[in-house]
Structures are given as C-alpha cells and as structure tokens.
Length: 229
Ligand SMILES: C[S@@+](CC[C@H](N)C(=O)[O-])C[C@H]1O[C@@H](n2cnc3c(N)ncnc32)[C@H](O)[C@@H]1O
Image (cartoon, rainbow, N blue to C red; front, top):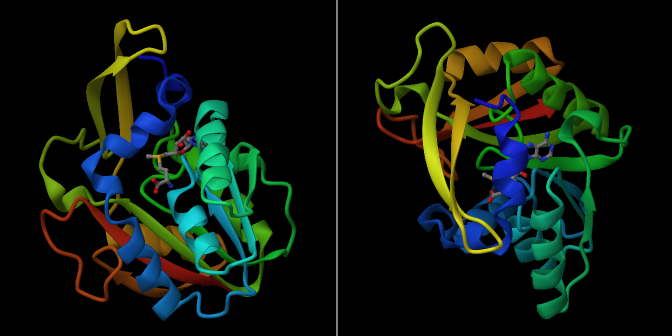
C-alpha cells in the first residue's frame, strides 16, 4: 500500500466526490455550525481539507465574506472553484498541505470536517502536524470544529494502530477503473480530547456530528469542538 494513498485517491476524484451519500447533508451541517459557533458572518473561517468546498461555499452563500478553503488536491480545489463561480460567491480556495498552513493567529474558526486531512495521513505524527498547523492559524480563543472517524463503529480495526484498511475502486479521468488501497485512523473521544489538550486546545464538546447528543456506538464519526487556549 502507498502510505500517501490519499494524494492519488482525491486527485482522481474531483466533483464526483459529491456523489457519496454522506455529502448530502451539507446545508443542515452548516446551519447547525452557524447556530452554535459561527454566528457572525464577519468571522474569518478556514476550511481545512475542504475538498469540493461544500461547507465553505454554503457559508459564502449565507453572506460569510471571509472564507478560505485549502486542500492538497488540485482536482478538488478546481472543482470547488468551479462550484463557487457557478454560485457566484467568493471563497479563497488554495492548494495547500494542511501540515504546512502559512497562517499565524489569523482565523476566528477552523473547520476540519469529514476527514479533511486529519485521520487520513500515514501515521499519528503526520496527523498531529495538522493539529499544530491549525493551532498556529487560529487566533487566541478561536474555535476548532473537527469531525473524525469513531473507533466504536465496528470491529475491523488493527488494534495496534486503530487504523482500518480498505480498497476502493475509482473511475479514472480516462474512464478506466482502478483499485486503490486506503487506510485511515479512527479515534475514541477520550484519546482525541487528550491529544487536543496536548496541542494547546481546550475541548468544549464531544458529540455525534452536528449535534449535542452523546457519542453513540455505531456512529461513523464524532465531532469534537475545541478552543485555542
Ligand atoms: C473526505 S474529503 C473531505 C472533504 C470535505 N472536508 C468534506 O467535508 O466533504 C478529505 C479531503 O482532505 C484532503 N486532504 C488529504 N490530505 C490532505 C493534506 N495533507 N492537506 C490538505 N488536504 C488534504 C483530500 O484531498 C480531500 O479533499
């Protein structure tokens, strides 16, 4: 398996990413974040691993003027720019590695949703680099909204790494099918809370995604909201 499988995987994808059923609840997700944490449309918000920009663009359509979206994949960023143009909204979309964010004390909030880089990378150290970069990018007391895979969703993990290995068939740009071996990291809430605290965050909420309900067995992801302390 190529440990950097995520580069090839998302480079092949682009707008087809939005065919996945889990991308279909964007409007409710964004409304929930606005109600709970992103009340002021003047907030400066960074969407890390923004993919096709579904959350960033939805915020922009609601009058948020200071939105930046970054992603490692040129084809995801190209798709995001096309959608933003079609919807006639301004978002600063850039190709950038989440481990090397060039921002310092700049954002009121950072979103990292649906495995936007964090959890996809080849080992814990690489994933922690994302947390360090997010911390640098936030101003003091800035909010970090993260969703990540829940270890308590099934029992197919390697107990030594808490990673799950799987194979996905992709249709390449030339129409040919190709199988890619993938591996991602799942977490428990207490582990990730501790990790965030070690990286300078104070945890405000652990819940099923886009809710304040207790994290449940079988929920694919959970949400952890924290503040830069
Ligand atoms: C599953 S998608 C999530 C997209 C979006 N956040 C959403 O909620 O739909 C994961 C995204 O993370 C991006 N990604 C993976 N590694 C990254 C990295 N090191 N830096 C920035 N983006 C990365 C991928 O290219 C992909 O677009």
